[in-house]
Length: 372
Image (cartoon, rainbow, N blue to C red; front, side, top):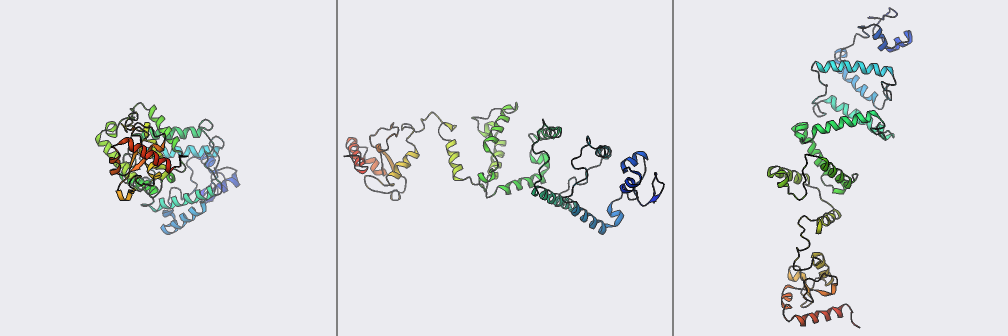
C-alpha cells in the first residue's frame, strides 16, 4: 500500500483521478511537491513481470487494438501552449539523455518486422491507423506550411539537409549495411519490373527532375563538366564499368513505349547528336537524302522496282532509291526527282544517263497524271 502525502490515506496506487477529485492537482504537480514519492508499486516493472507472459501478451494486443484511430490527449498541444506538455517534455528529455549517456539504445535498434514480432505488430497497427486517418480525409500536419511560416518545418528541413549531406557520395552499403542495401535494391527493382517508363514516372514531371539535377550539378564545385566526355574519360575505366553494369541491371524488364523511343531518337538525331559534324555524314549526298526520305519513296512505289517489277521480298533486301537527274546534292524538295529500283537496275541505269533521265521523267508524269 502507498500513502498519499496530501490526505495521509493508503491506496494500492495513487492515480490522477484521485489527485484531481480529492486534491485538485495532477501527478506531475504531486511529484514536484513531494520529490521521490512513489505513485505505484508497479513502477519500473514490465507487463511480463507483473502478470506473466500469457496475460501480458493479451493486454498488449488489447492495447494495440484500442489505440488504433484514438486521439492522444496532447494532440495539437505544444510546450508553448500547455504547461503539462512542457513538463512532460523536460522529464522525458532528461531521462533519455541520461539513458543514452549510460550507453542505452532504442529497444528496436537493428530489429525488423521479419526478425521481431513486436516490430511487426507495431508496424501493422501504425499502418492501419494511418490508412483509416487518410481515408477519413486526414492530412499530414505540414501540408500547406513552409519553413518561412512555421519554425518546425524549418527545423525539419535543416535536419534533412544535414542528413543528406552526411550521405553524399556514399553507397547504400555504406549507409545501411549490405543486407538492407540488397533488400532496398530488390524492392526498387520489383516496383519497376514489367512497367513502362511512363507508368513509373506518371506522377513525376521528368523535365523538372532533369532541370533540378542540372542546376545542382552546376552549383557543385566538386562536379567537373561532363558534356562531351565518355564514362571512361569522366569516371575512369573501373568506375565506368561498375556504372554501366548497374544501369544495365536496373533497366532489365523495363521497356520504353513506342512514343518514348521516338522521342529518344529525335533527341539524339541531327545537331543534338554528339557525333554531329555539320551535316557531312551523308556526303556526297545531301543531308535530306536520309533513311526516312528513302523509306517514303519506297512506300510510294510499293517497294517495287519501277523498271523490272522486282519486289523487296524477291530482292531479299531494301530496294535502292535512284536520283533521276543524277544530282547527288539534290535536297529532296521534289519527291518526283526520285524513283525505286532494284540493285541490278540501279547499276544498269548508270550508263546512257540522258536516255534514262527522260525515260523515268516521262514514267513519273504518266503515273501521277502530270501531263495534259
